[in-house]
Length: 516
Image (cartoon, rainbow, N blue to C red; front, side, top):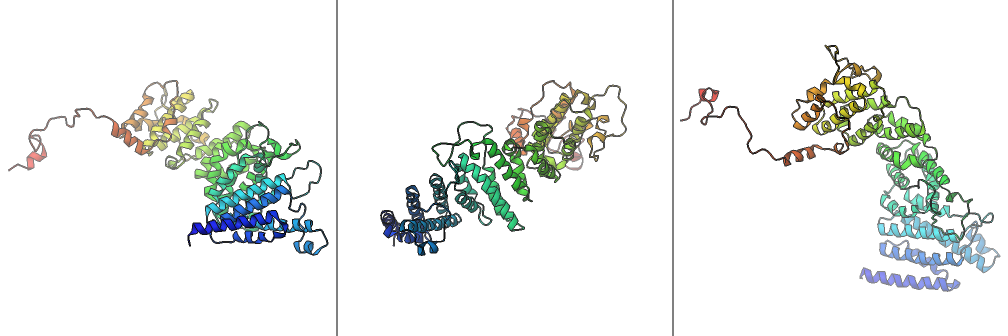
């Protein structure tokens, strides 16, 4: 049988059943046939069933034909003496509950079309339940939001089995609404807490789903326009927490602190730290609460420490946090691998920012310049073209460090006093040394590197050289630049012109070989 014809037949049958349930309470049992379609193995039939349930329970919610209040046991109500209308509403409320449970299960369906439609239908029910609450208000103008249904939606997205990153990206459109965003943050905080308390080890898939959802939450920087609610209300109350940005910041802070207090996979540490300075810290109610996470990340070493520096610097610079070991940590990250890591450009951009203050002591800046110069001896050309201007910029900013390249009437040094293994820049004796490494690099095989190292032979210009275009320079780009250079028309290859096929008269070739 043609699948399209079968789908059309299913759609017509569901339409007939829907009409029967909505027009006559005597035909209410037809709802079982509609719900049975949600158990089908055919994705097309499931989608038709979801659309029918959306229209059916959407209409019942609009009409107010579902029981309102704490849902009683179905069998007890049907056996009781209440009126037929009361029994019908309780019975239909249980069918609505069954429908929502099945839609939550369909969020894990193999077909993305089924998952997407189930998500949209559940969010439609969230909106309708918000307008026509299924619980009784405790007082006048009590703010009621269908948190239970939203918790089921978010719980379906944060599963430990399936990667829901694509489905979460669809859910992001609802996070533009203030009420959905506020309650999602609260619900997600609870789900993460429960998941980690129930199992000692949580799957990587769960952590990835949780991070994808949490990182999709974006708050405005300041109070602005009137609140944009998904569930429309005739009149807003200033007493509702979801109206105020201050409450959103508190929920945002609890959500991230609850997430970051757990032992995360290494890959997630990096993702969190990349987003920390611009997507997390500015929106926290108390940014200084991140100090424990950032300092522990900074102590981990490698790329994790490198990425933690930016957030740590923001807390120091903007929130008056005292962290005396900051520059010592930064100095400790300078090792040969820094030129080969994925985040090299980000690190040197941040290091340039951290060392931009003219109030830094000369011994500290000299230690950084000397350490970089020493590492430059074994660095690849693409890194040298960025590091050499970086060192020269340090000398421009801090004239007291120029003794590293020009020390009038200075003593002759038999050995370099700089101690490269000393972790404390104050004890490295860098200011007593000189940048002989730059003079060595003037003999580098690559002409551009040799030219960049020769800058110290002249008086350094006052304006700094921007290193921004050089941060992402690669070996391939250097090769392409050299390849596109036009070579001169005549290139001398020998001092004395050769005579004959075997060369000059006194060449070894002519002494031992002859042409015959």
